[in-house]
Length: 348
Image (cartoon, rainbow, N blue to C red; front, side, top):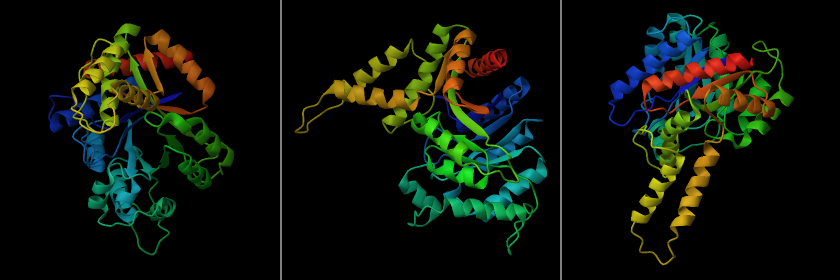
């Protein structure tokens, strides 16, 4: 089983943006030494919590400070960029670091609509993703009248990213590998993978379907320690659901402490509206949203991870697991990746 890493380059509370980028590189070096296959950096805009807005620059910086691990975009939100410029950027990266660059492509803006307008300078939000993917593919094949040097003729692997079923059909039609964002949108995982495999057409890139699934993982020496470390991720997802976020927070004692803190916050909010204020309803709704968003996860010791991994594989057949973590302590984070690798190697 191939194991890879997804990094949104989160900023830990108290960290500067530069320190978060330094941690990005240190983690890449650490998982490279552990034998992970690839290291993808996601694109996000207009959030203090993540510093991954200039994705191609961070990818170049990571490539320059590692030796062998594949590094790529997980992904480029293609509606934010012209396919021609994407081809030029990633053709340049492939020229500088041959055989080490991946290009994952997503159809979402990676931000809110107001910021998307600032990026695109247009109010036209028509979905042109399938056409843009094929246009980009053509620049690498050098099949258009306009040539995108140095991309022309280079083999930069393309991956279709998705969090619903739409992109599954596109990945299948084009015969490209498919990466599903089940680390934050797990609801349609099984359905999307089935659609992709059922409709897959062999291509010059792939003879058979290739599925990558995103999974949240928190591994530690004991179940109790893993559950404590996992509360940083839980707090982060609460922030996302409530439309806020300043970065990764230190862990609290246990999961219940996260909900207790949220309950206290809700009680502290003034309410003067005509509708009765029901704190338990708000807590229940927020808790349900967080639990649904983060349900694709492995948490625990090596033995617990092995059991959860087997159960997950019995539900969904995939070829590669792309791991997302939100652990406050960088040393504990790298330890989590080491323990996961041990668990998966023992199962496989």
